[in-house]
Amino acid sequence: MNSKSIYTRLYALASGILLTFLFQTASAQQSVKPLSLNEAISLSIQNSKQLRVSHAKVDEANASLKTANERQLPDVSVSGSYLRLLQPNIDMKLDLKGNNDGNTDPGTKTENPKVNSAAYGIASVSVPIFSGMVIQSGKESARYLAEAARLDVDKDKEDVIQNTIAAYSNLYKAKAAVALVQENIRQSDERVKEFSNKEKNGLLARNDLLKAELQQSNYELALMDAENNLKVANLNMDIMLGLPDNTMLEVDSTVFRVDKPVDSRGVAEFEQLAYQNRKDAAAIAAREKAANAGIKGAKGEYFPSLAFTGGYIAADIPNVLTITNAVNAGIGLKYNLSSLWKAGSKVAGAKAQLAEVQANEAKLVDGIHLEVYQSYENYLLSHKKMDTYVKAIEQSEENYRITKNKHDNNLATTTDLLDADVANLQAHLNYAYAKADALVAYHKLLQASGILDSDKK
Image 1 (tube, one colour):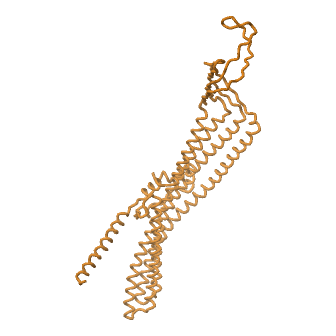
Image 2 (tube, rainbow, N blue to C red; image 1 turned 90 degrees about the vertical axis):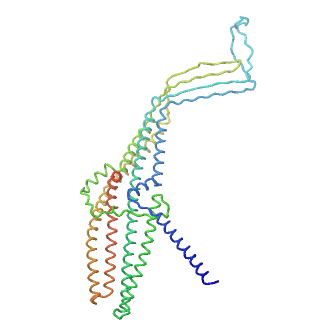
């Protein structure tokens, strides 16, 4: 094989590798998706498994409400039978005074008829008039439980929104960490090259060069961790939003504003908003009303039930009997005597359910009080941290500048310089994290106050 042929094959191979690389790069670029916070919230709501479960519970509660409402509708039933009979022995025991021909003597008995079939049909209707408030209480309880289920959906929706904001912030922090560490690696590379030249010229000790190289290795390890965290955070967002796993997301950094003024409302105002707007508080209040209705329904079993009844009967027994137009109507009264000793346990159970709901309500009130206070303090703390980290960045950058000047003039050790570099990196990381945490803390306060969903509309 001549050299020209070898060069031709190598050129073709290199071209194929280059084209493959360009194709993969283009495909990767196509999968990058810019993502705003509002779009992330909208997608997460659409794809939330928890919300699907909650909506299914609403459908179930609505079906129970429909069942309760249908209990007051008339009960209508129709039945009928056609029977084939063996030859029965029939003794009518009837003394006929005569027939139409006048040929039958008084006191004589007719020959028993032959019966081999029978047919009958019955239609009946019953309309409840009074049932001891059992039906009305059941309707009332089912209505409140359906309302509670709908409020649970709103509560779960707020949880989805808050989780999305937290995941979005984590993705921002992961990207910020990667970018900052990459920048430090770039600066570290320059430092290692500078130190290497100085070491070759005898202007720097070998040990100082090794320290710089060791720090560079540590930065590279930190970058690996940061990139791994970014992949996990990105995949978490893809799953939450229902996107393909290979979709790379680009967050909108403008939502992490640092110039947004602190909300002037006090903790007492936020707590009052919570009692007025919290969906879980409204849901438990609806369940308390349902429990009260359940007690009334259980007590209703002590009373008799009254209903309007009506029916129609038709029957035909050949050679014996034919019945038509047998219509009946009236008022039916029913009283189950066993309710006198059985209904008491049902009433006690209904009261126990009410006591449980009321205990949970009191527990929720305490939880709201603590959650609002804690969220409010965390929100204020996040802004204080941001202000502190801004000063810390200024201090760390100035410290690094001064330390580097001293090091260049042999007035500071290499260790001092590397420590100043690490402190500067940490200050920038802390500030980036604080911006993300402040956004989460503010929306957590809105969630605790029950106004998160209204803020996002």
